Amino acid sequence: MIKGGFGATFWLAARLFLHPKSPAAVYKNPVPFILHVYARLANLWISARGGDQVCLICGRRGAFGYVAAISDQTLIRNSLCFGCGSNSRTRTLLFYLKSRLPNGQLKILDIGPLKSTRLFFRDLDCTYETLDRYGEATYHDDVTDMSSIPDETYDIIFCVQVLQHISDDLGAMSEIRRILKPDGVAYVVVHQFPSSDKTRRSPQASYLGYGFEWLYGEDFRVRLESAGFFADMISTDKFISEQDLKRHGLMAQVLYASRPKATAKS
Image (cartoon, rainbow, N blue to C red; front, top):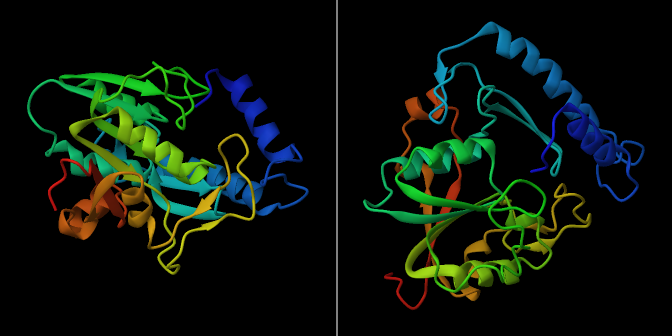
């Protein structure tokens, strides 16, 4: 997340859609730019017409808008909250956590924090810290080398839509394992391709965090476990009703609650 107002946002967009190293450079591939423009225009109409959906993070009432997923060139409908900017993947994990966080003072690290996750954790009785190379954060380390953070520091680590953009994703997982307390939990969400059994490298390198380094398949759990975790797969159909799915703009997906192998109970 990069700090700044309209000027910084405009400059970031210009680099994303014009820089020759960007997989979204409009003269090489116009699809991401077209999707982005379409989402912006559609969201103007959606935000004005209202609705009966409720964001579980900021409490805004109305309809959720489109998110243009530049990395895999898709439009995700019923996703963007116009109040806090949360997306459906993030809200789904926070919906799961809301009633399941353990009692007592917790130390939490949010890797790649969003405005929405900052809002969610701000109201909890916890020590909330963040890690982001580019934006406002407690730590500015690379996720593959978080040397500023001692071993076994955090009760909970929150990592959403980050690992698929990291070239050395196994190194990042190992570092998350290192700074997690023996009885801690790392909640991980990635973009998976359910039609694929095997994880493979993306043919397009990531640029400024956009574009995938990895196309994760069904073996993502195996990758987590090779980094020293026992990973519980949590299917959203176990805790989300059809009514909640629509009302809060959630997404059917798989979450991973990853515990250090030495103390994990299978």
